Figure 1 (cartoon, rainbow, N blue to C red):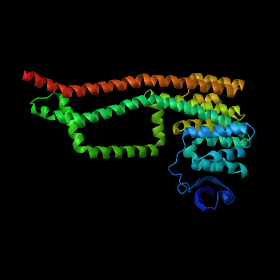
Figure 2: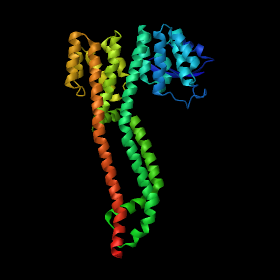
Figure 3: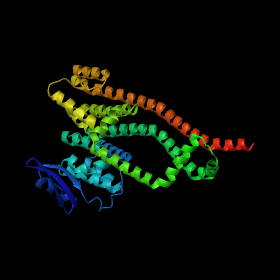
Figure 4: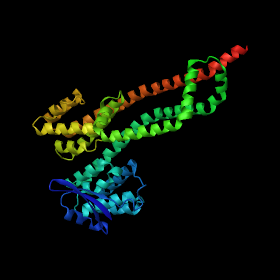
Length: 394
């Protein structure tokens, strides 16, 4: 097995490729490199799992089974062995093996699973790490299953709101393409035979000329700008996340409420596990896939460490409205953090659902209006010259 280990030495981050005969000797890595930061298995491609995927539903099912078995009295290792026997996905098998190693050899679970983050996401790693560190793996699994279930439900709702508009746009592109390919060629000679043609028809003919003669450049340009967009998005991730969360009408609100619902739901569950608020917010921050919000949470944590109250620290940022600040003040006064955080999570869930409805209520009619305008343009561009010829013939 080939591993790449990242470790700290003399205040520097170093990487080293290591070859081991089997997984049982992985503990040697931690003995040789005591300050291990991450451990990545580089043998996945050789084992034929490069093209395999693990869906969010499969991740939810995996940890749901583990939670159910552990809650029924089985040990964590016994539950893993039972699931491994019925599992056919090699990636899941690798993940289960890493989980077993973490228990048997007392290895850091977050370091072992970092190579599988793209399959699992950050949420399972965060909750499993908390469960192992605090000795309450059963509670951690229950909390993880709850968070995964809610996350899948919310994401499905978000995707469902976008599905219909996307289908409409795809249908429009296909329809316009069919007009260019099969309709215009049959009428082009009629249009060119006329001395004067409407502006809509001229525009349509010009567009057809550009598409038919420069389609390779258009396709190449789309690919180039698409790749450039991906590159810039990754290079300037913070600026991209700020734009997404603040500057897109309607959709930015949807994203804000989605991230904050996920954040406060995870915080309430972690605090309910008898952990401090600072621990909850520090770990919940890791499961938010928006760098701008992560930066805000880091600054809030620093404010709390500097002696400011929780409510005061959140109040410095306009993303959190007055209702949230008052609820946090109530939590500090009553020390009922778990209940208040749960209420905040419910508040953001309702906000998210309302924002989704508002987004759909505006976006769908807007797209239908755009489609209607384009269809009207096509009809006028094609039919008006034909009607003119018919009138001249009469």
